Length: 351
Image (cartoon, rainbow, N blue to C red; front, side, top):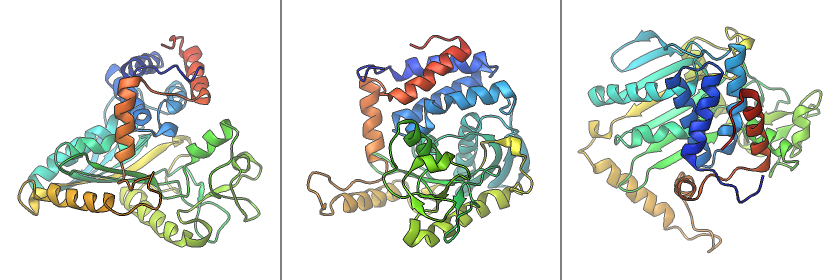
């Protein structure tokens, strides 16, 4: 693929939607899946964008992603609920859960929903602005009960999934958007480095011998390496605590942990979502002003490199999205090969 080829976002959404419907997804489910995958690409979360379309198409074909239907409300009180997504795509169910948490927060000041068995939620970042646009704060944590690829500090075998954590915060300008893994890197980034035949930028893997490594080939060796907890070789005990926090708030609260999870669930996720209405604490607009002051204080700090000013989380992603909406989305050759596979698999011609 030429580096000059930059398809428009809506064109890729329409194409992906056709592919997903061809594999049996109901139109409204396919549309939500396509929109949120492309949203990941627009924000720069390449490993959780259309690169994962192949997985989603195969999961629909195998029947491990439910192609139609709705989630089940397992339990509910005034401002909390547990949903079973019943292996529907998380790309379809999570926007509904965020919307319901916002509704709860408008009445009670806060709303919390835990969603279990949501098949492949992709990048948490793509759901955050739904809340911040409503003037709400949002926090999200995600784990994968059928997956163990992250080692606790001091171990060379895995216990956790990569467990992304995300927050969205409204300000008087652009929102703060944070989406990070609680492991040193995400499994998708290791696979991307492997496909692009390059080393990881830092030792994020622990080999079967207990050595920290930058080599993605060790991830597919036998026995394979595992991901290190956030903090790595020196401070990984902090990452272990955060991973434990994540899985207590997701797997334990949902009562669907690794002992209960079906190995066939694959990338089915459990997600903790909490929305807070700041007007429950202060007059409307006051929180956004306070948040803006904090953002400006961060950006006013003297940079180490004058050519690299200090940024707040989400600033770069939002600027990239604006640029790609104007110029088209840039896909690497490795990602484009995956999209060509999807084209052949579904018989839907790439734009």
